[in-house]
Every structure is written in structure tokens, then in C-alpha cells.
Length: 199
Length: 199
Image 1 (cartoon, chains in turn blue, yellow):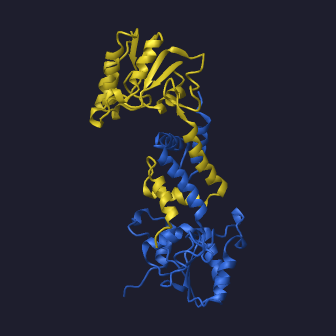
Image 2 (cartoon, each protein chain N blue to C red; image 1 turned 90 degrees about the horizontal axis):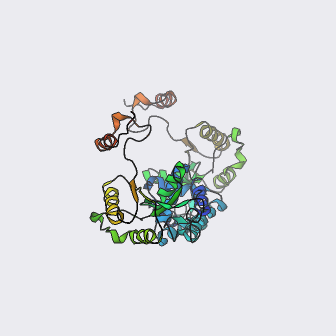
Image 3 (spheres, each protein chain N blue to C red; image 1 turned 30 degrees about the vertical axis):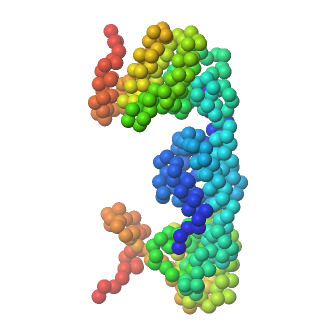
């Protein structure tokens, strides 16, 4: 006997979520079926509501529930320091660490010729416009320490080095709490290159 | 900066799913936000559709998309052999193994005085009616091999022993592919008790 079609459909949709295999999707589907009506309705509603109300901030292209996001419209943030990230999720990660008081710019990806992502597919034009219009004090390149992220950072340095006074790249090195024993050689190389002086 | 309310709401609803902690819920929420519109809509729709079209089969109380489920309405199934399970999900597990050609009865739980689940809270009356109305050849008690499942099985044996010719309990023993080294003593005890004769 096959599962009824609506259950199969639900399993299929759930299995499209990241890290959710068919077995987990099945478990989730059944748990949704066994939930009280109002709880499953709340879940369906939350998906639709999040999807319809959350849009790209007109300035930084991060997630926002208004035209201009909370960060971009906050007068206490230094809007002449822009932290450039690949993904809107990165903003919340950085915000959580409370280390940055400037504003953001989401590229919505990284340059990757292998995947057909050329610079014009990213929000680099929009960044150029922000740089043009405002007097930017510092551009902090926080793209990922991957091949694509590094390539993107280099591209941005070339593009903006004559237009922005200061362009920095977040440090790459040993993650806090990590064990040297398990560090890969790339990370170690970066950690040695970027070593700071204690004397 | 806090996450926009619609995202927080979505994370909260996702975190109610089994095995989904706040971190996973966040990851799922962001992935839903980054999905194409039609995919997230399909997920929300699948939840609502499954929840509204799937109901309890009038006969066995398993999941069904019609009044009487596929199994109960299949003339090829032996409807005088009833496999009693605790949970509608169990039906699909048993069906997957292709070992059973009879019909099912879902109790929707197991007797558990600790959790206030007395026999009248379960679909035992409905089972009694099925036994009364039909000439049942065998009742296979497939409740879980837990304290509650065993108690429920014993209760059903007492209740039906004069009304049904044959009442059986699924074997308890070593799971296929398991290592004796890691078997708990309860399982081992059951495996010894239920040992079969090769001579």
C-alpha cells in the first residue's frame, strides 16, 4: 500500500529543505499530521507570511520587513562603514557577535566562473552606486574564506581601491576554541600569515 | 538587531517540529526565505492540503484520504485478521515490510496510567465492535515492546480471549543486523525466552 497522495506530496516538499532527507521528511510529515489543526495551520501561515512580508532591503539587500531594513534606517549606525557579505544570513551572524556598528551590503553570492556567476550577476553595481553617492570611510570585505569568496574580495579591491580610502578583509586564521591538531593547512597558513605582534 | 518578526515567527513554528532545534529551525527558515516563491508556496499548500484531506479511516482509524482507507477497502486483504497497532504511522512501517496481508486497527495510543491514558481513551471500544460484528480469525497485537505497549497487549488479551479464536503478539528479540554486544538485557531476555527450535 502506498501512502495517500497528500502525505506523499507533503513529504516531497519537506524533503526539499536543506539537511532533510526522505526519512526525516516522513517523520516531519507525520508529526504535522498528528499536530492539532491550529498548530499546522500556524506553520503553513508562518511560511506564507514570512515569504510575503520579507523582502530585500532597498539599500543593503538584506532581509527586511520594510522597504529599508532596521539596520540601514538606524541613525546610530555608522553608514560610512560598509561590511560586504555574500548572503543575507551573514548579517544576522555578524550582528549576533556585536562586533560591528556600521551598515551592510549583500552581494547575493560570490563570483564563481564554474557556476556561471560573473560579477554582473551580483549586487556589485548597487555597491558601486552606494560608494559613488556616499563618502565611504571603510569597506570591510566579509565574503567567505573560500575560493569564490577570496576571488570576489580581490575583484572588489581592484574595483574600489581608488574610490574608497580604506578597504579591509576580515582576518582568516584559527577559529576560537579550535584545536591546532585538527586545523587544515590552509587555515594554519592563514593564521601564520596574519599573526599579530605581542612585543 | 533582532530578526524581523515574520522570520522569528517562522523559526518558532518550525522549532515545534520533532528533532528540530532552534538552530535547525533558523537554517530551515532562511532556506525557505531564499527559495523561489512557488516552492515555499508549494510547501505551505502541502501542509494545509495534507492536514485538510487526511482523516482517520472510519474502520481502522489509520490515515486515509477517503472515508475508508485503501487497506480496509481492498478486497484482497484478509479482513478477518486484524493487526492492532498504537499509532497510524505503524501501518506504513508494517506495510513496507510486506509481511502482512490482513487489516489494521489503530488504538491511537497505549494504556499509560502515568500519563492519564486509560483504556477508554483508546480506540478499544471500536475494536470490540469490529470483533463483535465480524468473525475475527486472528488478532495480532503489534503494540510497541514498551511498558505501555505490553500492558495494552495484556489488557487486550484479557478483553478478547473468549471472543477471538487466536490472539498473538509479535515476537520480541534481537533486531535483524544488530550486534549481541550492544543488546540491552531486556531484549536479550526476550530473545532467549522466544528462542525457536532448530532440531
